[in-house]
Length: 571
Picture 1: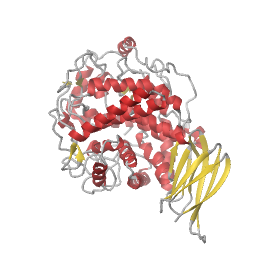
Picture 2: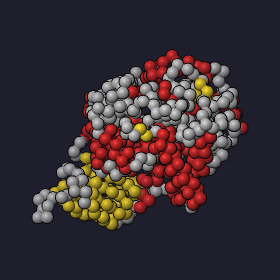
Picture 3: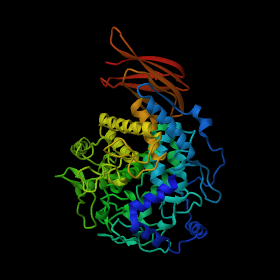
Picture 4: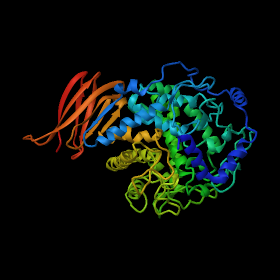
């Protein structure tokens, strides 16, 4: 079954008659692409983004680029290396030039889900493309969203790849009061949002609630900055992102100060009916806290001290509300809120978003870690399932958001753990994901959209050859957690956590504008003890920080342009 056919089948299975009815209702007498484009011109799309036109360039091809890409050396598991190269091969199939008349301003990487580009998908695609910057259309793919931003700051999450127009079903073409086209999996479509404790927005939105979710652009931009260190990029995207943040406050913020979402955040999750009508999601609320923190960091970089101060205040205010209203002190977990303000009774992977947003106290973070270690909930054979295993409706084969393991949510969990100092658990989850992916790769020869939580199999509803966000595992996790390389471009520093007794390293590793060959060989015996002998060839200077995976002992070295050799004690 090809990807297009699979996507159509999957949509019918996931959303059923109610979703299909909703889409048909929204698409009744839809605006034509020409009409939509005309409306977009009247609303002055892209006014806050400086890039206005596409500069034609040759689209990169895998065969011609392979010898320039980072080449991992990992004798411990050759399967992972083969999976790495297969993932890049699949990724290159999904690189595109802007279609004529689309208004897109850059080449882009696409998830190959359907005929549209998606905000969520594209943000995660950039995270592994950073490893090959600037050889692939990674972070620039987000420019095609910024150039479609409406005058009030809204950015639609799903845009037609060919026309550059927001997906018709999510357009509020008739300027109705804010509503959700697909609803909350309750059998209702075109459902108005109910605001509690605040007045509805005075200005009609350009898009529906379905099109405003998972605001993670700043996360993707900060991941890029950590790897590449491009302050010019931060200056380019700051105003579009600040405008987007303000628009979400206008349309998504409930009277309690937290943020609403609908089915579009977690498709067929058991949580969705509890959000019916305008309930607040723990994921979207945490993402808005993270959004504010990231904007504060960007503003600080750009010398906008007043902006930075205001965003930090807003981040702390949102975090305080999350802890007050969404944390259950008895169950020791974060939950969504119903429209009535009650905590929804469903544990999902969304409850870990507060970690990456810096919301929990140390005690709350410890409780979340306990859930990640609990085999009855989230510590399944393949970690981390999107539904706790003890929830009604959990499917051990996956069933999309009823248990499947996804690269995006695993990455969120991993980065959240790192933020709170749980690096060993973060690495354990990343390598667990790689291990199970590798077992499936050996059986099927490819990578999948999502994976089963209780067996080393593809998810029961999963597209094959999906790169797509799935490339995060074989590419980013292999480099960061298998080989152990973690870049910090703003400090011009490369951290290398060394483990194992086999050759490990990477040729043509890229960070902060450097291209570096790295190789570590474990050698023994020595009078002083076992050690790694490191050889590095670099085209520029940087600081290398090594960490022994056994003792956590750190050493710093100054790497000079040219050839370098170092020795690091293992014990």
